[in-house]
Image 1: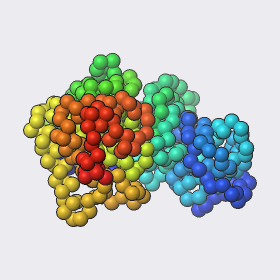
Image 2: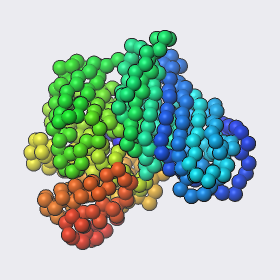
Image 3: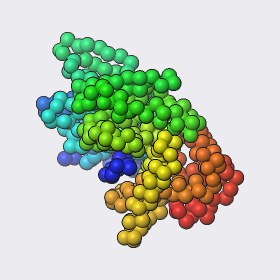
Length: 433
């Protein structure tokens, strides 16, 4: 996820419905099992209408549950064992009746005019999602709540959509619209869900059984073949280092808009990034960073944002490691030096912090750069500390052991200690904590 700008190396009314009485127990976060979302964008008004089903369970007994809704306006909310709800700012609190099974289902209708999270491109009939999933669907916006997703998108016939998961159905409607159904059957956090809509040129190729798709409205097919020509090699490199195959049969990259973000099964890349790659064939860091997140971030996820460096530091380091594999040691060292320089400037200002943050409520630009660049630099130091073979053995052990799970820094430290048969307490105390 890109929450900070990057240079060429790797450059983040209170409404009340129903009968919700004052209650004694606090609202808690649920464990969402599955989301089913229907969306129809209105391009002329730059707004969306949606319907959603959320299946969830409660880890403890409670009579209230909370979800994130961004700036969405909830029109209707129903469900068995649902007593009512209250919309407060960017959250919704749902009152629950007793349910011995502890599993609940919500049906929600809503409308929204997102100011962030879903970007309409005014000069084109196009849009894309970025960062803030709760601006276009009701969800738990916490990183350790992973769920499956079905996403139905109703869009004009002449447009194309790319989304998280696998395209499983296309239905042509009589009103010049087409309904696309995407399904993701493995669980990932809600922040990794996304989609884009527009008119695109497309290139497709196969690599070891994985279909690689490249989309862009402003690049030719031949240009995209050059821009993305290292993707297959990247995928094989990360599979080997992770010891885990790519989790689905398709991976897409889209050049459009002004943001970068990994999403489950695809990546959004800033439209002008293609020009950088056409100018410099070694400009692969961003593509590698976002692809690395398909393992480290999307499937092996930090349990909370205090351990965000486990997502971003690893993906940033992996982009340098891929450059070493593809272009040699000198390119790798250039990347590491660049990461160190960012960190060193922050340290010189007296703004250095632990990579494990005490909170991540209002991170500064320096805070974001620490998790990306100090995080990557510390992984480089760890590689030097234990040696190449043991370092990569540790990365593979960590990834295989925790793939599909949510972790904290102690899990990473323990995995590296088991793989290297070394006590790394001193290293982690100095460089991480």
